Structures are given as C-alpha cells and as structure tokens.
Image (spheres, rainbow, N blue to C red):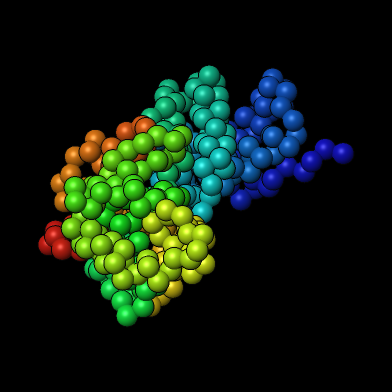
Length: 310
C-alpha cells in the first residue's frame, strides 16, 4: 500500500505547483523510495510555509538570504546538523529541478553553506570563580592542605586529571618551578609551576603529606587517606564539593581547570603555540578552540558595554 503524501492544499500555488512537478520527477526519473520522497516533500512543505511568512510568493522568488533564515530558525529550535543537512539537500534538489525546467534562471541554494557540526566549547571558570574555588579548602587539616596544593597545581600548570594523579614527588622541581609530566602516549613534557602553586606544594610536603603516609606508601605526590596515590574519581568528587562550597553554580569538572588555565593565558596575551606546548597538544588545531572562547567573550563584552551594540 503506497504511503499517503503530505497535504499541500494550504500552500499558495507558487509553492504547491512546482512541488507537484518536482514530486512527479522524483517518482518517475529518480526512482527514489516512497519513504524518501515523502520525507523530501515534508521538508519542502515546511520550508514553503516559512518562506511564505517571510514574504515569498513562490519558489520563483525565493532568495538565498531567506533560505539561510530558514536554516538558522531550524537550528535555533533544536534541529541536529544531520537533519538540517537533509532538509537543505531536499531544497537543493528542488532548486536544480527548477533551473532545468526553466522556472528559474539561478540556483538560489548555491551560496548557502552546509550546516556544520559546532564543536562544543569547553566549560571554563572566570578568574573570580577560580579565586573562590582556591579559597575553599580548609587549611587547618592535612587534607585541606593537600587539596589546595592539588588545585593550585591543576590550575597553574594545566594538567590533565590523570597526569595530576600520576605525579611522583620526583616529578616536581620546586626550586626551578617546573613539573615533569607524562601525558597521552607516554609523551613527556615540562610544565611551569606558578609561585602560589609552589608555595602550596611546599606547605603540603611539610605539614600535609606526612600525616597521610602509611607503611607501604610509595612516591606518589598526592595521597589519599589510605596513603595511596589519590584517584581520579576522588579528585572529581573533591572539585565538585569545593565548587559547591565556593558558591559556583556551573558544573565544575577536572578538565574545566585545564580549560580555564588555557583560556586565561590566552586572555592575558600568551602565544597559542606556547599554550599548545604547555597543554601537550600534538595538533595546534586542538588548542585553537580556546580562540573561539576568547572571541565569544569579546562579543559578549561588546554587546554589554558598547553604546552602539543594540
């Protein structure tokens, strides 16, 4: 039993009539499946309704700008990139059909780019949020002293959580202020340590770590209550709890401190290649996502404070 076709009776003739001839061409010459034909037709009807509201009288008068507005509107309402691409493909096929049939001289879809997957920007903390986070540990306890040292080093050197948990005492040179890190693929890199992190680590080694050591404790820098190397899961829990104590409403994850490290360096004027080296990124393209964060921040600041932004 053939699939029922979507109703086009509510469309103006300028939209409905070209769709009818296009439908016949799809069925007779392209040999597409019924499901594909119906899906294309549904997309084109949806587009027609939007374009009519935008002032178009039919497919002969549709502009590239109007089509871009439709795609943008769909994107705002939550359509995924694959769905947007399929809808645009349907309109492209129709546009080329109109040119072949002499109903239009131009392909109004030529200048419309395919929707692209937007790479999700990493969550970052503001500088004031970082200050509040670092003020959260209770320095009256060995655990609090340890936790401050971890957080300071985390933010100071841009480490991954696995790198932080895997550090040995010998990996840290507090006199020269650097840490030797073994990152992804067992690649070694040297990361600088800021002055506040150096002070916090020295304090931890003096009055924090000795209270956490046990008979079989090894050379791990940061220890759990059991005297073993602290786990990634525990770091996640501690960071979540300290963020809550600091009144930070956003979800704070270990990688968020790494992202904050890179973003704040970029805001301060650091070279992207230097940030790449500090983070241990093999590809500069991975580091370039932080330039997107900076651009968005600048746009937000402009929108808020420039007298002619609205």
